Image (cartoon, rainbow, N blue to C red; front, side, top):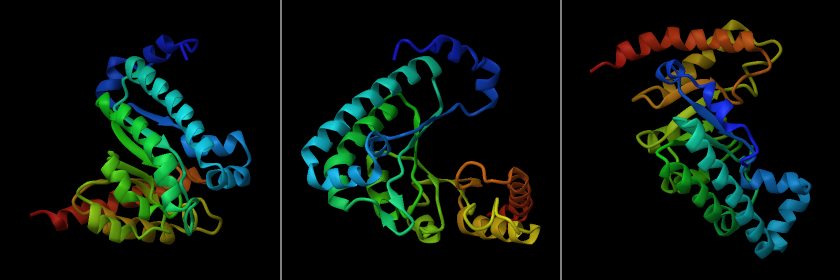
Length: 240
């Protein structure tokens, strides 16, 4: 870890940037994602079921590495927020049975979360897919934000239930609208209105495409402009 030139990386974040920008670190390949890159996906899923003790040990070693990385990031880069990136679900639900996630992945992820929060860094978790059944656990574990927020989840229901505890980061539909061939300005405007009505009330929504950027950056910019345009009227109508 110390072979990386942390000093040069830190020097790129000037005091002016710190005053004006959010310093945001995306930590890719979380514990689960790393296990299925070390072996193929099918073998990893089978190993979680057939060799839980070995997978627990492997996840522990990966968490140790992540914790060391977090400590270096906090010391040198001093970010405002870390996005811990670990996809735990597909479009229909989690990859693993809940008890497997709770027994193997959750305890080691908690150690990583605790390290991030221990440095006073805001914690966002990225997971695509239908992850809503894990969100109560994730909130109790310490997340403050959730990134991707795909429509396979009951976003309106999650907002109603957890909107005072959870920041929604993204949510604009880049699977069916943004970045898709044939998408019109009317479709972009409709998506902007739909998600603003769904997520903007009370604050706690940082809008953007599910996957950071779509396949058509110009569409992303136009949809963002529609969100800003509609939000002015939305918030004017919600002032107390």
